[in-house]
Image (cartoon, rainbow, N blue to C red; front, top):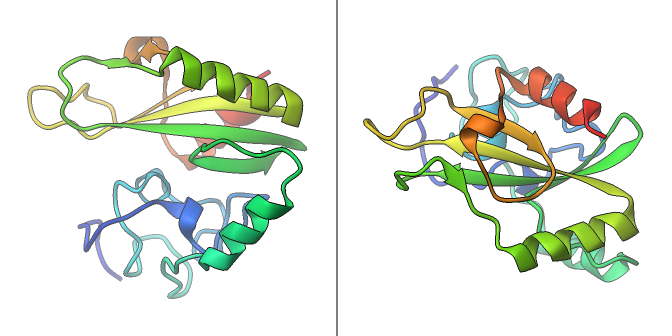
Length: 175
């Protein structure tokens, strides 16, 4: 079994053909993928600790993306993840902090307004997850943060996320 050292570029789980989008699980991680893999911080091109079997990230065929977009009655704006949990659909916007000295997450007002209009019509709850990957001197001391809604905010106004189960609990508890 490999360690957590990245072996290449990663887009996270939302582009993997193995992901069950209804439960946000897969054969490798039946309780949900670890946050480093789900967020794209660490690729899943090789087996990783804690996984069952040997399944690794495999690209979702482009034709499935095109078919899903063409079949959608409500055009879905870009959200990083669209999952169903607890009988509700949730759009999760992932923001990765890499170099900025500020702990402020900025979502342009027009983008936030467009996402809110879409979410209201599609009966989707919106969420923001921040991944702090900044280097020494800028790093907040915690890797993952959560807040319901889509808007500009700072990390100190977000909940610290301990693991995938905790994130799932936060998302399901949002109103």
